[in-house]
Amino acid sequence: MNPIVRRQLAGPPCYRRSSALLKRATALASVLILAGCASLSPDGGTADVQALVNGNPLMAGTAAQRTPDEASQKSVDTLLARPLDVEAAVRIALINGPRVQDAFATLQLSDADRVQAASLPNPVLSFSRLAQGSEREFERMLSFNVVGLVTLPWQARWAGQRHEAAKLQAAQSVLMLAADTRRAWVRAVAAQQGVVYLRDAKEAAEAGAELAHRMAQVGNWSALQRTREQLLLADASAQLARAEQAAVAGREQLTRLMGLSSARAGYTLPDRLPPLPQAAPELGDVQALALRDRLDVRSAQAQNTAVAGSLGLTHATSVINAMELGVVRNTTFDNDADRTKKTKRGFELDLPIPIFDWGQARNGRAEAQYLQSAARVRDVGVLAASEAREAWQGWNTAYAIARRYRDEVLPLRKKVNEEMVLRYNGMLASVWELLGETRASMLAVNAGIEAQRDFWLADTDLQLVLTGSSPGGMTAAQTASAGDAPATGGH
Image (cartoon, rainbow, N blue to C red; front, side):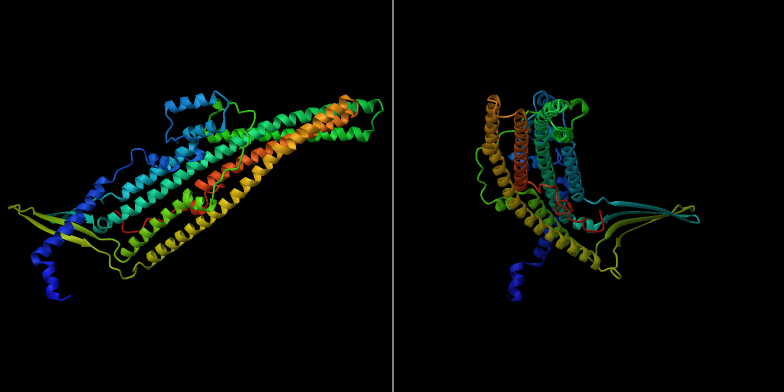
């Protein structure tokens, strides 16, 4: 374009100066508005976390609470007064569990960091008094961190991105607690149910051992046959002891997750696990669901965005990362007869000279952090897709095994046991065959309980894999921070 035409389009010099002044005033006003609007969230970000986990099947329709109040504690007592199902256990954990409170406290720290990053840097007042003979000199200076003021919008945006990632991590923590509570409840109920059947098996073994002892005393049985029955009794006793310890451990783990004190630990669990669903649900493409809905994938992406923002800020301040501008007023008093006073006014500018440090190390560190964050995004994506396939296959396998026990093994075992009782009543089978069949039936029922337990554990893992995080807990890629704040001289 012709320079004369460009100048005509740009307007007269006075107009251009006014436009530039208006732009600077607008930028300064936006900075001041941004700093004035920065304030702590009233709920510490709890509502945003609730929106992220709302409707998740792991949540049992319950909202996690940052701080339990009197009403929530009464609801906990109400839930504990009746047999504790899995939904009630999850509700108690989300209301009363210390892990939820820790997650929300961590989120509140992130919110405080966000507000701090969006706050204007405080001015610094310097005062000095110098004396030379009868002369007294007083120097006052009010200085501002100019770089901190200029980069304030960038810092605020970067901290806001970090806070969004912190919300996703807090939501992950809530879902992880809900999933852990479900697993603990399933294990506790299954262990309690298994103890009942193993006690029956032990009683059958005791009856066999007692009968073998009496028959050996009258010479109808050999020492070998009696020893075998005693061995069966010893093995049944050992299995029962292990099952009782597993029931205690499972119950205590559930108690810890719900955050209950010893005074509240006397709750009652149901007698048996919930029945299997009638049919397997159609979930569609589980990989696509995991990559779209998993919170750890979204958290890694949010962290990567925050690191990219910090990289740009580090590059912009790599050479000049600190600058202070101060207004100086210097007054000198002479203790002579006239009491003369002289005042000097001016300004002072502190600017680092980039002689030895040109910011190469800061730039290199920021770029490495970005590459690290990008690698973590890819790692979490690969992990999410793989775990979704694995969890879906595990769910189908556990469902098929549990259904096989429910529809085939246990009905057939029951029929065999009934036939054995008929044969015994008709004196076609001995008492030893009846006792042996009874023990085998009890062990088959116990195996069916374990298959049902494994299905419900696989169901929890699948729900967590598709919507929350890795079933084994947050990975290093999920829990690693998005990097330190870029160094710009501070506020």
